[in-house]
Amino acid sequence: MKNILDLIKNAKRHGGRTPIKDRGIKWEEKYEERSAPLKKRFAKQLGPGSYYRWSGYDTTTNSDYFIVVGPSIQKNQGKMFFAGIKKVPHHISIEDEGKTYSPYGEYFPTIKSALVHASSKWGVRIPTNQINYTKEQLANVDIPEHIKA
Image: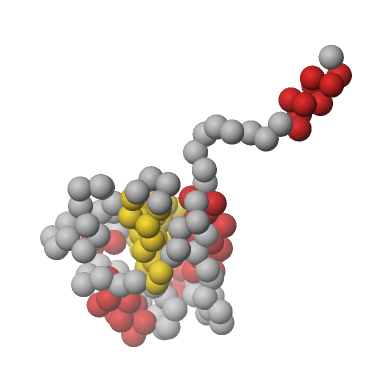
């Protein structure tokens, strides 16, 4: 009986979904027609490294994903930093014009905490020499309406 319990205890678990960070997705920093002006805008108003967007393809689900880290507005807490991910529907390309796909994610008081979350949860690399912007520095930043949650 003890041998069976040892086998069960040491058995490798198979089941459930593989976490996104363990799927081997190659994340590429990439800005599309709508996100490139946003990156420039936040860089001008807040500073370099204040907005990031990565795209990647998951071979295990044959799906495109994108990750966004940057300023946003949370309904109850005001201006914060957001880290979120979105799986793009199969029948749609990420580059489709006129389509908006809102990522789901979490809000943070600093950009570094948002980047650490994105790195640990989805496997993106934290940029070197990242400035740690805080939510207090977002006070004078104009965040577009479509970025509010």
